[in-house]
Image (cartoon, rainbow, N blue to C red; front, side, top):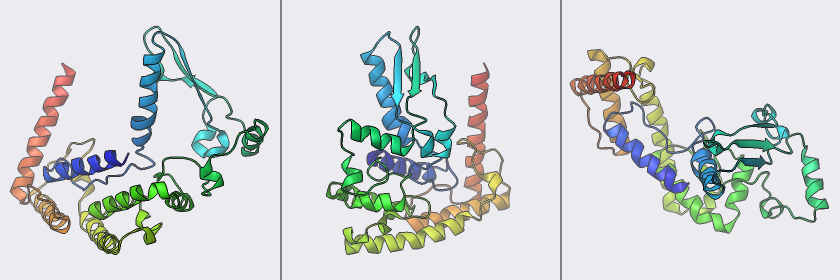
Length: 273
């Protein structure tokens, strides 16, 4: 997952340099953009199952429960699962214990002679997930940092916060979870990243909403004044973060918008034919 976030940041920097995005895009996944789950969990598991059970119907049984969240409370007991479906072979998902309460789960584990995961019993987590999850509470992040096996990962993730000036969870910086695990130099870099983050947000707030891209494409040609503003914003962001961005004049911005809008039209026409 860390490699995916690092690669995403490198790609987002390249997009910003080439003006294929107007605002700098964060490296992290978010609750509304959880590419981590489908890319690194669901899709991988589904692909392996389809290979293992070629030509057979597949039933995926989960431990999802209504009590866990408002979104899970609305899930059906079972539903078709397109990721597992193939020609002449069905894929289904069955939430077998969806009506269970937490006490039911704990009682079943105890009666079966099983033990809770050490994330609960040793480190005090409220849920087991990725080591540092974008959905985790602050206490669960602290629990994860308490595991020695996670500490190198923790420092690498904090370095990405420092490089990008984007906090791991919106306004919550992973660096603040366990600063004692960081070197003095990295703590200083984080303080500078926080300062730059505020400046970046204030600068980008000057951009009119209609000039932002929709699904990766511009939808309106900027006026001369608007193009000058975009160029000014790009210049200041580039200097702030050390990005060797192109299109730092109004004329260059307008030319780039025209180029992208023409490319988008061509793409749409090809789809229609």
